[in-house]
Length: 115
Length: 113
Figure 1 (spheres, rainbow over the protein chains, first blue to last red):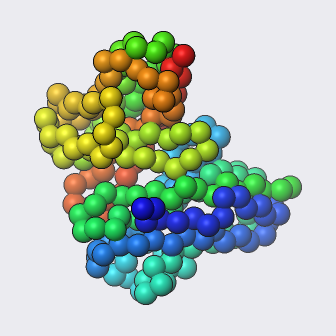
Figure 2: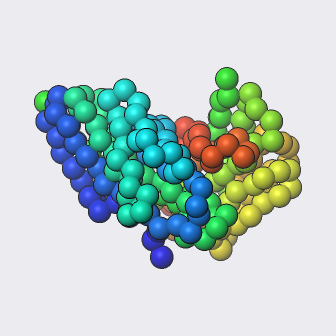
């Protein structure tokens, strides 16, 4: 069963505007990390941001921030002031359902940035 | 700094031929190592992971195998490729006990014809 769900296969945003990509997950772990990765056309997987589940404060990396709702098991990525170079496939990653299971990736959201 | 290299970048192989993809990590010791496969337009599927030399865990039954002959070397192999083995293969590593942040290699495109 899929334990990391990205409900938006495709999203688009105008340059300089803000977009939010959604992700939900299911894990029995109590202490864990969540990740967003970016995959541009080169196919290189690039770490965008990481959130520690025991921290209530949402992680921020420059124009990228997360909205982490632990009780709801929701982990969305907000991209502010979108740039053309942000166009890519974005993957959410979280622990699997069972304790000790490997990191599981969502199916991805293809982000288009319109000039 | 740590780097990961994976090769070859592109491979076209006939059905039934063998496969060997190689990956090495530099700048760290005792990494966890991973092989992922990505079908076109899809997410990543974990194939194998290793926590040490000779220690391989398989996530998905298939005709692929993995080996870790040295601490920072991870090899993905097959004796006889199938058409369904086509895809984009990614090697990755993580520092043990550090929140599982995974760092990826450049990837290898495999087309089985």
